[in-house]
Length: 368
Ligand SMILES: Cc1ncc(C[n+]2csc(CCOP(=O)(O)OP(=O)(O)O)c2C)c(N)n1
Image (cartoon, rainbow, N blue to C red; front, side, top):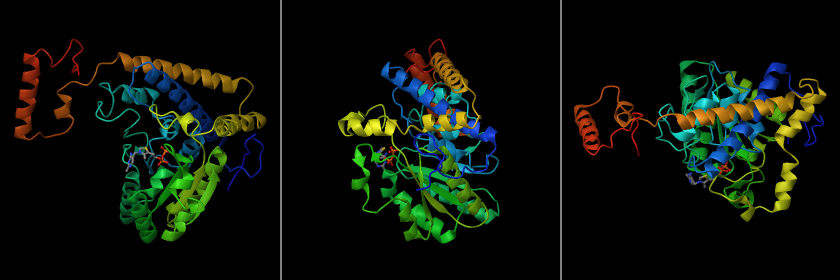
């Protein structure tokens, strides 16, 4: 398993040659993710949003992988536990909070679950899909299209350990192996698929080894070591960009929270295991390294944490105050040129709810 920083932040491998500004961006994306998570959890527990997916403990996998991509030409086909990929590339926390509330500025206008983000910029981002593994063949299809067009973009697709049991994973890996499409498969092995542990998920000795069956090299990295993740993904991205074909990367990590806000992990994970992994916290480990190297100065890390706590609080308050999507958007967002029969349905729908005084409220929103 590739490791550059051990759990105490000691350097045990050679750090990748990366601009300190990018290193700071990785750290900031990880802290921003943790603060977004914290805010989202509070919103859900106080009944303000319906659902969230904790990212605590996984931040290094997403931030390290995102940093290896070129936003001007690469694609991300994400897992739902990849907030740090969006935040690293400069997606605004406000956009993400708007999605949590499903308000009128949510890109999906409330027609997706919370945390199922969809963005068109600043990086090419495939909408998050709940059915597990579906992003994998999508990613390979995008990579094959870029290959055929002679473009030099790369697609990174990420998914959990449980998602390797889906047909999407197998068919995507097979197509990529055969076509040598420029795609990087990133398995976030957080050791559980909800309550199902890896021992019940696979009889393979690792997830990385599964690449062999498809003619794809497999690499295993410490997923709580952001520099190791960056290093492995950057090498795979460079190889794919230069026509060397796909790579499967297994990043070993641990979900420090529940699967979602509907889960209580204490019912199936021993407290001692939780404590063991809390001591391997990816943010704490990176902070030790950055302070030792003088990349962060005393007080910087606390300031960054406070900065993002305030950013997420404000974004959630603004999102909460925004109107809900208007009824009419159900139609106008779906068709650019709407067929006549749907125009008729739209007119009926609006007039029907207006007659019951239910089409809009004082904010112009549809009061569901
Ligand atoms: C095809 C499919 N089967 C089952 C589910 C229900 N489900 C949602 S999340 C989940 C666990 C996924 O585990 P994993 O892929 O390891 O990702 P993690 O949540 O651990 O990040 C399951 C079984 C689903 N969403 N899609």
